[in-house]
Image (tube, rainbow, N blue to C red; front, side, top):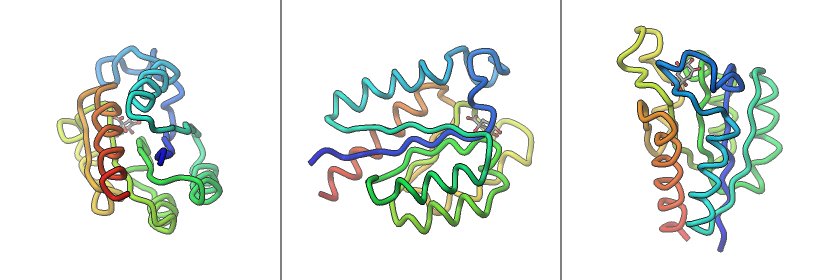
Length: 148
Ligand code: DQA
């Protein structure tokens, strides 16, 4: 069966390409999504990508898409460190997820060292720029396919 992955991107990730390239690299979000689209194709998986700068919109998307989604790839961006609402929405979805970050959040400001998602995640990958998404997606697909 084809696994379906929801790819959630949080606030300010629409600015990738020009935003702080020393932390996030130079690829745009569209380019990252194309790259992980190739990874999904190779694994016969499907991805559905969504980005919003708004916490409530992300919660609404998770609630709306959960019935059709087998797992989530999540870069909640700043909401990683602050959002109980997004944590609750992902937990309520009952779907497994992998948390990813482009930058190594543990080598940055202390407030980025706390994640309100990580203890619920299958795993966390940080610091590999676009490859955080690639590794995270492969790990999630492997997890879901093994469970089938
Ligand atoms: C980020 C790290 C967060 O701390 C930050 O707020 C982001 C991006 C990353 O991908 O490295 O917006 O999630």
